[in-house]
Image 1 (cartoon, rainbow, N blue to C red):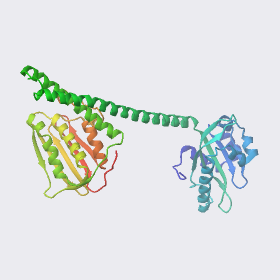
Image 2: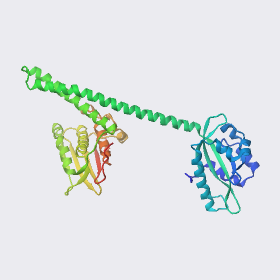
Image 3: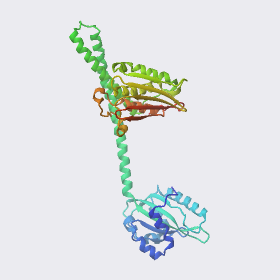
Image 4: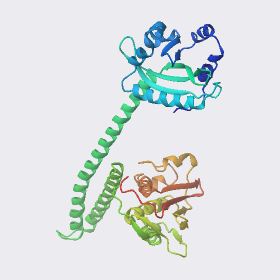
Amino acid sequence: MYYKKVTKRAKVVKNYSKISLPLMHNLTELVPGMVALYNIRTGEYIYVNQSIKKILGYSPNDFMEKGIEFVASLVHPIDLPKIIKKNDEALKRANSVGQTTNDSDPIVSFEYRMLHKNGSWVWLHTDGMVYSRTSKGKVEQIVNVSMDITKRKKTEEDLLKLTTELVALNTSKDEFVAITSHQLRTPATAVKQYLGLLLEGYTDKVTEGQKVFLDLAYENNERQLHIVDEILKITQLDLDKVQLRPKIVNISKVVDEAVDALQNNFRSKQQKIFIKKPPSIVKAFVDVEHLRTAIENTLENASQYSYEGRKIAVTLEDVESVVNIKITDEGVGIDSSDFSKLFQKFSRIPNPLSVEAGGTGLGLYWARKVVQLHKGDITVESKVGKGSSFTISIPKKNKASKRA
């Protein structure tokens, strides 16, 4: 950026015009960065401090005797056009001001590469500003302070490379999980079919003792299939392969369907479910199947982490351009320090009901991802021992994303 907040280093530069060259020489020899005073009218370097030797391997005289053309030849060919353009814009701006004092002259900054005398590239950060003007207020001399940032740039490149490798590795992992899950599901589905045939009596008669074990096998196989399906859904999300098919729907109906799907859960724990809706129909542009599942996952979480006989309230709110679906329970509650863990994959927060509840720790992660595909979000309010309130917020008219 051309304009930037003046740093301490820049403030030192700003005061150079008020001191003599001999004094500047004495002062800048203590500066770790390279300081250069340049006359834009003649293309000459009037002064360069000794730090140039350490940074670029050249002597101050190399710059002062050979001038701007030599210096420009050292700049990386990719960076040079950018510097020239930015410098011309800054100079034009400074000249248009027509000041006779540099008290409010801005700093112009560059990050670029220059060729070291040994043939290696050195990354520099340069802050430059007007040092002096002509009697007509035009820029005459510029002072630059350059710092070696090669180590910083190397660290940035290493981090970028590492990030790219991690993204590729994560994608490979997701693809592996997807393939493995499919392979697990195929035999599990076959086992389900064979167990079903045995239980229905399509082979020899099954004794009561055998039926007990077959029922247990069937139930555990169903649980395995459920886990595999959960992992497959998550993998599809993480691989950006979830396709939404949004349409205008009555959100009240979607809420009712989600509640109905979990009635067995509520009955088994003798929990009472209350639904509150606005009198008028609330519509929004959503994918019905995915939103309903997100509501079901959030409701199931409320049921799992609430004791028997407790109440769960579902409140549908029509708030201007947004639809809120608030699910409030009287459960064990969550400490605020654990909020960040709620929507992470495989995250299960320890509490008095966590062992009994079981689960994969994927439900809320999937729910929030799907809601975010709809350009919405899920937020939470909770206190330990006081219950929790999860709010699913969905824009009414904003077009949902087709992919994650």
